[in-house]
Figure 1 (cartoon, rainbow over the protein chains, first blue to last red):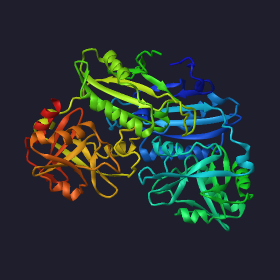
Figure 2 (figure 1 turned 90 degrees about the vertical axis):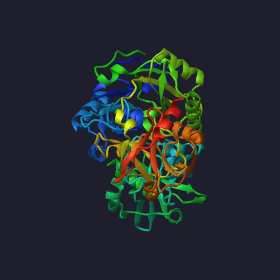
Figure 3 (figure 1 turned 45 degrees about the horizontal axis):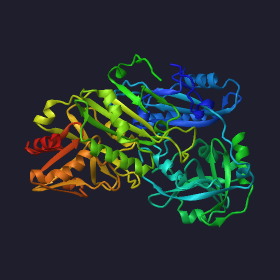
Figure 4 (figure 1 turned 60 degrees about the vertical axis):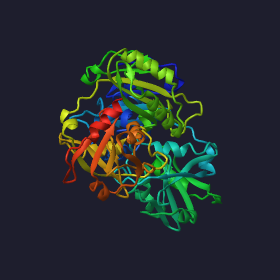
Length: 280
Length: 280
């Protein structure tokens, strides 16, 4: 079904396909709305080409599998992206929900998932984030432990929403989230790395957090910038002793942290090296 | 915007209003879909009259306040229910989402919430649930602790979805959820009470769980069936020693548990007394 663009200015730069059909509106019976029963991905598209697609799709398929949600085929998703972007740049957001049901947490074994692809404008980050580094906020909210959902980019994101609402200073790029044990996990919209000498550590995400594709790429590619990367438990005290802190996601690449929790770090070259590596 | 009913048979018995306008489809930019950023209520409507409306609205307003979501007025919601139900019976589901935004967990302070009211058919539960009592399943999934979301009926319900998917035996009415500490919290779609003599206990919900309106009513009205009700930590071992276990929600009232975790209880009159009390 086609809708005219509503008067809402948010809509004017967004186009979307639901199961391959142009539409900006989803059924109220979709379990993505009712229960957050779905997963999503957000990644850049350059000249119509989804960046690092193989990893993005692998993660989407893996997240769907954990939740027993039917994953759309690569072919269908790539056709959707082709339809929306042609040869343009932008950001693609894929949402896969379990499908529709009238009431109740249970669902039939033959439920059909809904495949949603949105085309959005590329975000405009302050150039100083890359040039000079970023400031981080320490969130009060502590992430809860749910091993059955840990690492998955699912649609239950109220913790991130509440944490992001804790600050409204435009100079702050993101907020650091600790878990209930006081370990560093991630930021609200990015993963985090801490460098100690030639060791590049990122938090283990077996209790909570989102295991992003860019985090995975940095873990794999760190030797190319002469670092040894691994996952580890990192307390807030340990993070504060890092030689350098880096945050990352698929949209901005890597930014160095120059101030967090009343401590300052001088600007170093690693974030730019990683961003170049990630863009290659 | 009006949509024709889709071919999906789920739709044929559902009618809905979005912000007072007849519609079965919501914007893809709604944060209810993107993040589960919203709350909901489900309750019976009899002869067009929402049952125990004052308590339902109080809980809706309270949940919205905790999440800093703009709560619709009683007048608007009651007008929606009147439009949908006239003098009919059924089940109303209210969803209030924070509103629409393009990307990111942050939201503007003047964001307008979306008010959704759905009319659904009354569920048909097996008569034996009331006559003979119900069987419960012990879920493997443990509820995580998030004090900032505890008690709220929000749209982040993946834990309930995963727990409900653990069994597919139609003889099982619901599944008991423990938290990460092994305390009994609730069932996937109902609250739980355990009677010990003249004491009627229900789990404390300060770490997780949904504090339902029917649970609150039973806590308040227990003296009318000569019981003293209170909230307490209840371990699984303690639950198994109860003289009687009752589950409750706004749609079915109260059912007695006759079998759970390999133990049987004889049918007693309390569930029927509570159901009568709840219907009054």
